[in-house]
Length: 467
Image (cartoon, rainbow, N blue to C red):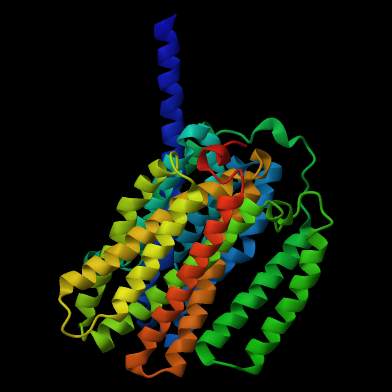
């Protein structure tokens, strides 16, 4: 009897492990496709005979659709099942990858990238919700740490993998490599991913009008901010942002009168959840300010060449990869608000140390400083994600998962827009310093918002892991 029970337990753990691996492999491919294509843009422009401006839509058509659809798919996961949304998203992502790889015209490539973006939105919207129901509550912080590590590794590996593929194969293989991963994940997902917990009842409803308004709101705001980042103040950017703001007011008002809103205003009433969202937006804004400005800083201030710039930035994601799983263990013992606050303060210190660097500074100091930034961001990421997701009721895990991704995209968009503004307002030598000062301000703001969670009785991670 004991042997049978042990065998059953091992079997359950094996199924959970394979299911989690399937989810994280698809997330890895989703994240890779946000960075891997950028390296190939000049090659693709030459291959399809389009301008440098037009070829940027190979990246934008993928990136913009994800936040426009993520919250809709997350609510669909709450209503119809996270497993179903994961499988549908993976199917679309795999088919989109196949279309991209087989494209003979630029229009076909853009259509494939849009299909990939829709699929990626479906997967990312329920990613953390699936992790939450796959793993026991006491294992959630470690699982979220591994998930954060996968994202960091994928972000760091994208440019290198693209270079290897372009050197030894052809650009089509940047997309074809997704297909077998998608097929395996679909098979595993259908067989092993768990169904939603039964606590939802049948009360949740999907509101198509809210989904349309959400799509239009984020589309107008993101494209308007992108227009501003690319061309500065213009009539197009102003009209889009104004329309987006007006639509957003109507959209948010509507959400307050819905039992299971698409934009999770019900979850935002929970102070721990709301503060975690605020911390996430501020921290990703700081990260984006640094990521955009660091190449300029290393080139104009430190006078590094292009090859050396890529190598010098590597310590940041590498340190995040190492720190994120360790932070998952720390969150089981210490308050998440404390860990996140320390992480953001370390990030601010790292930015301040970068401001002290000059052309004569040794490379090891630069590498150590960027590693400190990576450690700070790694300490923030896992505890904040755990707190955000676990502060929501189990049946609203999809809404929490979607809001986690949406907060990240909002922060990245704001950071990129602020960086573009700094690059226009200041000289070559001053641009990066201005971005880093703004990054320090945002990192400190993230630390302050995070520390406010210490006032909540439920701020301790061990309590948050409960539904």
